[in-house]
Length: 340
Image 1 (cartoon, helix red, strand yellow):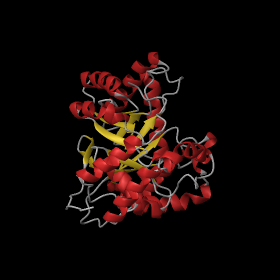
Image 2 (spheres, helix red, strand yellow):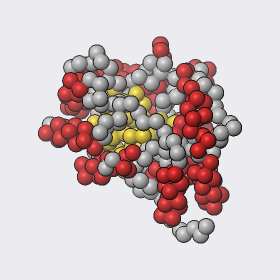
Image 3 (cartoon, helix red, strand yellow):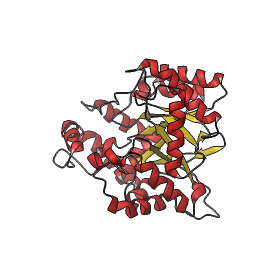
Image 4 (cartoon, rainbow, N blue to C red):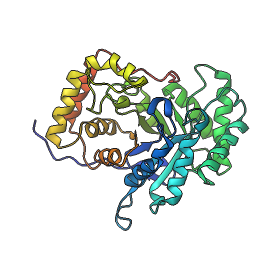
């Protein structure tokens, strides 16, 4: 494989006057005992991971990184734990300005008025110890299950912006049709709709096939790709004979048997590039024009993820990975809230 010199990816807009690197960090695991085995005793390790992610030479390194969280992150009594930890880590960090925060508000069925979502945003800010955040997002659209709730959701996020609680609004799991509807509503009120999160990886290519990325570009909405490693399937750490324990293991056993050719191609590019398999898989998502959010629980993970920045897969490498991904017999399950 012949490698040509390639430049890295430039930053993308998260909110007006806020540009972030193509790599961001997710906090889904922070407080989630069921899926990720969260233990409060490991909070110092999470903080060390946070600090490693934002470390840099303050006088030279002007990069900003997006940290994604949600008011539903944390299982049971720990709900909201991720917001609390992220807020504390940011307050105590010397590199505070390098962190741009966006939280996702859960579209719970009892949030029926715009005021309910504004109240939820204020509660998130209290947990984080902040008066304002860069981005407030809908965690999902109500269109699939409770369509009558959608107007309240749109109104609620607009109210958050109009009250000065957030610099912009965003969406998550909105397809091109619903994205256009929400965007038109907010545009009529002068509310900047700057981001849309969607599951995007070599095993989840729906955004490439549905016209979502084209619609995002047309509307000036930055795509944010979550689960770029498909819960770890594309990390290179697992195969059909080695899967993690717990609920993830059930999913891995279903998908891993058909992944060998794709993983082999990832490893080939990895060796040629001198990069890890995870870095290659993440870089492929960056090449689709998205900010990529990856989960971090350890400083080592943060350091490895940062290695996906500063370079770019060649078109030939992208095409080879895309073709092998197309041949995978069973892809990642789509989010049940993903709309058309």
